[in-house]
Image (tube, rainbow, N blue to C red; front, side):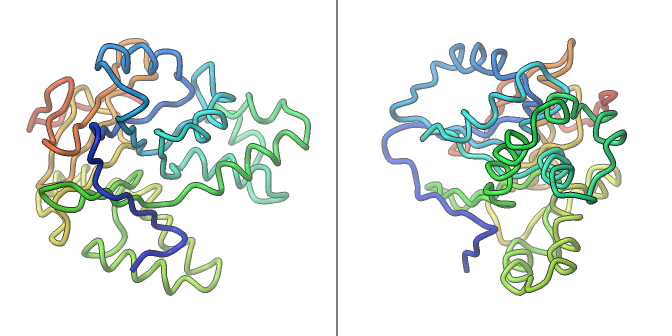
Amino acid sequence: MITKYVQRFARNTVGRDFAVGDVHGCFAALEIELAKLGFDETADRLFSVGDLVDRGPQSEAAVDWIGKPWFHAVQGNHEDMAIRYVEPGNRDRDHYMMNGGAWLIEKPRYSQVMVADALAALPYAIEVETDAGLVGIVHADIHGKSWSDMVQAFACADSGTKLRRITNSVLWNRDRIQDEDHSGVPDMRAVVVGHTPLKRPAALGNVYHIDTGGWLRDGNFTFLNLATLEATPPRTQKLNWEAA
């Protein structure tokens, strides 16, 4: 079951598929790292775990990147903050400023609305078909006990309250990584998430955490090959926390 909140991509038969950790407005640095990978825009695809905006110097570029045919992103909690800031009365200005939102706050109203509309069009979850099975991408964690539970919940989200309950998990939840829960997601080959900065990428069961602070001065971008589940740089089983 696919809903407007969940987007599925067929297997890539001509190139490679990568997922990348949180970008946070550091698109120039991301371009450099893609070049090192030999990324081919005519054949390869790049999937983002969200948090395209805030904190870094090129948050405005997020709208242009969303329009690239080979780039596909889910919403992160920073997209959620940006969208809710633009919706009157839904986000405190000072709070959003503290979380890196100056770039959007300083824009004229019509530009804010254009950005918010582009971010709001992003799905909350992505499914990518691979030869070895389905790989899911969300920003923070799944909602419920399985991927199918989450998709079903999205399908039944007929009110803002129900949707917010789901997105609180998908965009914000850190329970799995804080508890170092290795139980995984039973009905998926793998699930890829960001949200929590680590020194090195890590796997908890079949949940791959790939935010390694590419937007931080001493961090780096992690890329996960969705066909092989190999990370660049290599992952570790030990969680090493990074101050966010």
